[in-house]
Image (cartoon, rainbow, N blue to C red; front, top):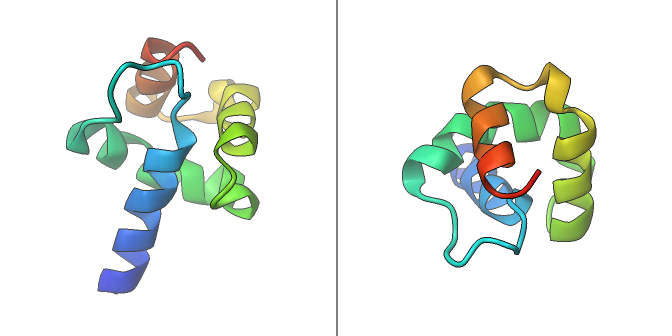
Length: 74
């Protein structure tokens, strides 16, 4: 269980666009953890593809994650 949570957090950290000056906050990571795993799991470890996937699925994302993606240029 702890391993999957850590993997999801790392996945989310990699998911946010590199445009941001700093990395995602813990709250931003938590906001997108489920959505990133649900819609973009095949892009783990591939930040550019993950970013594109989250943007492509923006209408399906939770409100919290959608706001995070938009705040990071998505």
